[in-house]
Image (cartoon, rainbow, N blue to C red; front, top):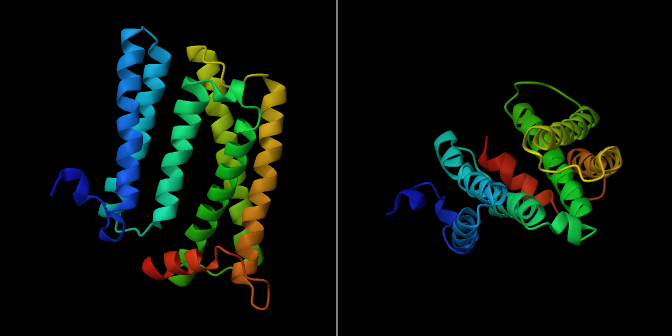
Length: 215
């Protein structure tokens, strides 16, 4: 068994692994081409994308944490779409809805991550909290990640002249607005999931699986 396969949970060593391998392999010629052309910014972004796709695999195995395959693939796609397509290949400039899609998707995902983190603590009786408290935490956690990302973009622009913020303040404020809406949606999903006699959501089975497998 290859070292990479050792870090892949058995229940998703098929299509999801092949998809991640495809993403990584598609970046190799991009890195080589960027280096030969002297485009160090694109080469750096492509290399960072590879690292962020592969890093979660050993962490999941060694930490004994169950992460649904859809979350793993979504994370890889997000990094690929943000750093490689968005920045290195200028999708942020050429596709007007690219930034909105990624910010809303990431805020929603991080809201769920914050929710799941507290749900696991509650299930282990580490803490006690009402559904509304967990939902507010999920909302706040997603907003915090959004703020940190804007700081990362600002730092890249100031130190590396990367132009990640595009229109400056206007771009940053729209990112905050999109993050807030998506974070609220994630918190709402969490509240419905945690509160009896409320509408179910399509994510309920996924949340059930995460909590059960990580007890």
